Image (cartoon, rainbow, N blue to C red):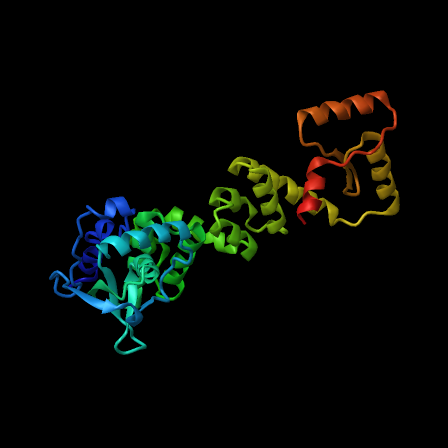
Length: 316
């Protein structure tokens, strides 16, 4: 059987076979029977004890919703496991099996104190196992963006697939695969926020390559910023960081302090040897109006910290 035909067989009936529907839908859902990737014949159903099954190390999914697991467990306790798991013989442990698809059903069965579950036994290589696991989870939208990125990375780095081939396998665009993999360039603390559902990929992408990305990520979560607002914040924070690392003489620092006392806002003076710029930082039109009023009056006022600076310090 050719690789392309084999891959088509892998995808046959995935949405029904791997659906793990909600308990209400599972009771009436038709069960698709996967085909053997070598012969094309339907795989028989057999039953195996839970203790002979174990999650695959190739499974990209790491997070399971506890409430959903409890609901599925209650359904299994009442009706049993309606959809067989897809497993393969464990290559490192004779007599045991590795779960390719259905780990959620296996976990819920343990909670329901079920001793054995129905399975389809297939023989897939490591690349095919990872492909099936990705397709299964992406169809259900169960993977976080970071889990998805890790799966793509393994296909590229461990199994030698190109990004174009990965995109073809999972039914996504190459741009989607590339942009998702870029999330792995974020600090682990930011990746954890994405895994926890507190930060979206759109909010996180502007932080790639930014120093102190975890600090800015906390601000985005705290303020509930949109992706566009997060991008503006990241750009502004990047500019502030670049300015503050430039060494300044005592005269320039004294001038900045004097202007900050006059305006009540953070002031930066930059100089390139011929000319320069004076920057007064504000975060709203009301603050801009306030700056104009203070400069026009020429009077000294009590210093007021810039809102963004306060929040940055608080999140650090």
